[in-house]
Image 1: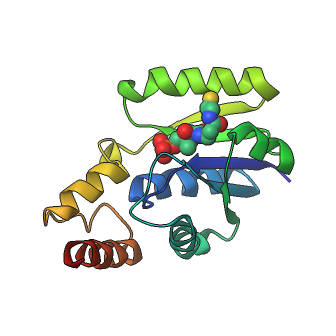
Image 2 (image 1 turned 30 degrees about the horizontal axis):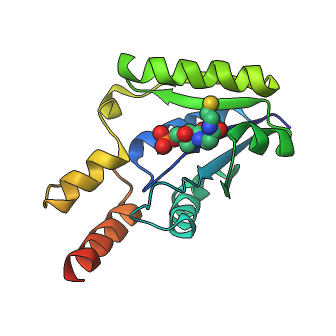
Image 3 (image 1 turned 90 degrees about the vertical axis):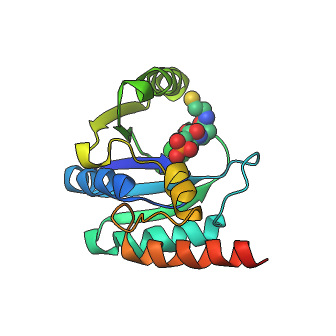
Length: 162
Ligand code: PNS
């Protein structure tokens, strides 16, 4: 089985993430989506909620497994026999940090990182911007899957109410 991992925070998953996961799912037998837990960031969605949303929107691909992980990405890969990390590159601004992480990860355990150029449609897209625009009432329905959009609107309304 050829395996790869698509890691991230996914708070929440966007169409940009989905584009990369879909393309990875066509290249590999199994794609693991790893929701990395960051103790210093409290998300809009809990890790379990993020996983449930990713599972829902990735069900269509048939070869995507979703899990959370607390710790180093290289340990997630080693424990599951995953030799490759697949990452989307949106713009040159992503490159410096992504290159550093790729080189660090390869130095740690030998895991490779493959960069996929994001679709130009989503080159400006991030979960952070989606949340900010939606929180001020902007339309983000074309940037996230419909199931995610509904949950985002509901969650922002809950936050605003309470
Ligand atoms: O969606 P994000 O927040 O841009 O994803 C970044 C992520 C989670 C992929 C990155 O921070 C990561 O790999 N974190 C896991 C901890 C780790 O392995 N750190 C060392 C990286 S060299």
